Image 1: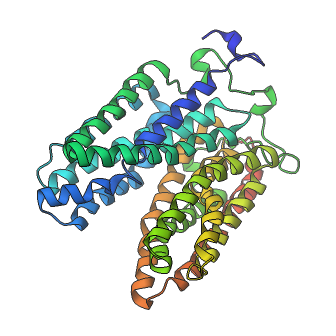
Image 2: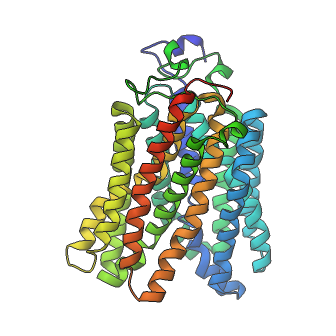
Image 3: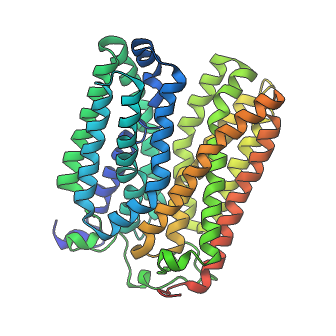
Length: 424
């Protein structure tokens, strides 16, 4: 790619990176999250262990990410990003292929460890690092487009996986999925992925020399404070604590929202619930794009307000799910509310940290989010089992959603005195 492609009006390689990120997230995330239980019935009926035992594989996969997130972010930042990512992506494909050879639950558990390690090394953390490095302008839009790939990928791959399981069996379906992962690993890892524009003799999309300077918080909230403190130094700073606490609240609230489908089924029936879920997932794509646009145009404070408010209102809407109009209110409101969980964590991190420290900081943010996400669904289920109602759970999660925005706002405010600083 010639340097001329970096000039205004010409093609910029950042858009290639964006397509790569969108496709990686669209394929690598669903097999761990939204599609992970698609194989559950076929596998458990064939191998003869419980559905709970199968689900424990997913728990192992997610738990690995909690502990490895900060470590992986350091390795990706300090060592050869391209080689590490490619090796992890190939290991990801091998482990998913390994599922097709498993004969018992313990083999699934062992492979789940590998999938978890490979997933955290190839999905959200590295892809958000790429977006942050390659985009100076339109970072919010680029982030929202990339994470929209998760919803789009899940929607496209779900019928494929279900069709393969029905027609050629669960083992072959795992093998086909593994081949898709492997194809992206080789094509993207070998030929297309570059951690920084400088690796291709370029500058980020929309780069201006002033971008290397810290923002003036009073005038510009859509520009990074460019804090350059190390993580070790950041840990003693209140802004970093608020950043992680907000991330945990975000995980709790968004984890709790995973209980919307069964709650809607109880309130409105299976068919209505299925339609509502489809609607809010489709609207979610537009919600993410809108949130990214707000961040780009009006700054991180407006994005935090919009994201936290719409997620909080989503839980308020769930209070009215038993009414005939309630589920449809949920479909619309949560279509915009679900954007908070995936779009804002990388954006609020980038609004504080400069490019040099972003990757390491985001690793901690991702881990804190996963901690919350692990407990969010359990809290909602526990309250329902204890009381026979979701009412109290939804009220509590209104608070979690609002706390997310408030704590992240505090994080940004408390980070302002450190703008542009590299040492405490």
